[in-house]
Length: 140
Image 1 (spheres, helix red, strand yellow):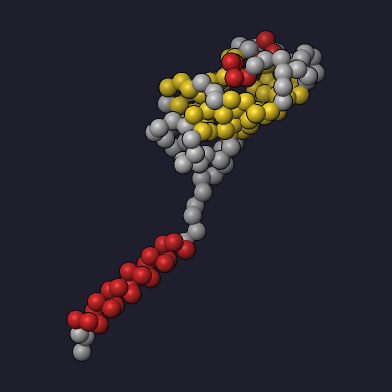
Image 2 (tube, rainbow, N blue to C red; image 1 turned 120 degrees about the vertical axis):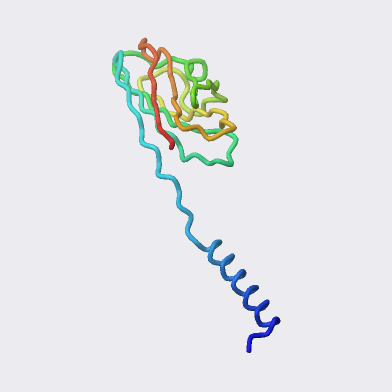
């Protein structure tokens, strides 16, 4: 015969097991976002989003620039913006190679939008004398 005490014990045990299973279940990470490339005015620019951590205060994008014709002297903080669902965000900073040379690499940091956007774009203006280069990702 099942007593009230046994029923409470079984319910508590079931809740404990479900909690343990939920915490042990592997988390599914979002797939990494693919790099986007632009070749214009003799300069190749590749932008790759770093994995987006929803708890982070900033989003990071790796930027690699290569040319064999002119120095890469642009200030990426002044030349860049993040567009998230149509709203513009100015960069927080650049951590990487200083202006000059034919090869530069670094991380552009932007503030993380308050609401997870469906579409993000990194726009970089004037690199190598080209117009605006747009690098776009659909997140949903």
